[in-house]
Length: 224
Image (cartoon, rainbow, N blue to C red; front, side, top):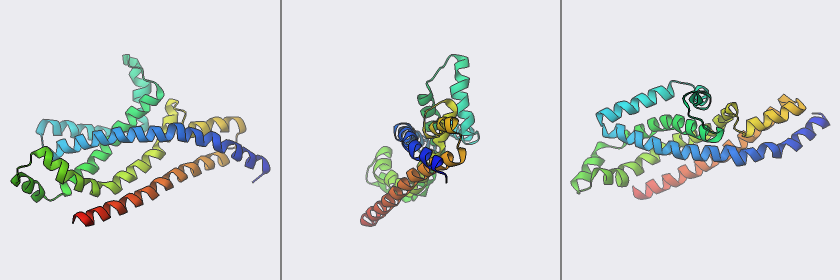
C-alpha cells in the first residue's frame, strides 16, 4: 500500500464513520423499531385468524417479500411524486425499510407465536384471562425468546441494507464513500474501508445478540 493511499484512508475514515453514526445507525434503529411494531401487529392478526384481516396481511407480506428492496425505494422516492406525494430522502428510506423489514419480521413473529403450545392459551382462559392478557403475559414473552435470534439477524442485515439508501440520495456511509472516491479515485481501498466499518457495526451487534441470547436463556431457565 502506497503512502498516498494510506493517507487517503486515514483522512477518509472519520468522514465515512461520521455519516455511519449520524445517519446509518439512526436510519437502522428507527426503521427497525417501526418494523417491529408492524411485525407484531401483522403476526398477531394472523395468529388470531381474523379471516379478512389475515388475507390483507398475507397480501402485504406476499407483495413486499416478492419485490426487491431497491425497487421499493425507487417507487416511493421517485414514483410517488408523480401522484403528488413528495418525501425527503431520509423519511422515504425509513418508510420503505420499516415496511420491508416488517414483512420479514412478521413471518418470524408468526412462526414464534405458533411455536407456543396451544395448551398455554387454554390454561390462560381457564384462570379467567382475556385474549389480550394471555397474549401479553403468557404467549408473547415465550414467542419473543424464540424470535430473538432471527430478529437479531434481521437487524444486522438491515444495517448493511441501508447502503441502498444512497440510491435515493441519503447521505449515509456508502454515499460518503462514493463522494470521497470521486475526488481521489481509489475505489479498491475506499470501498474496502467502508466494508470494514460495516463489519465493525455488524460485529458489535453480533456480540450484543449473544449477550441477549444468554440473558434470555437464563431468564427462561429461572421461569422454567
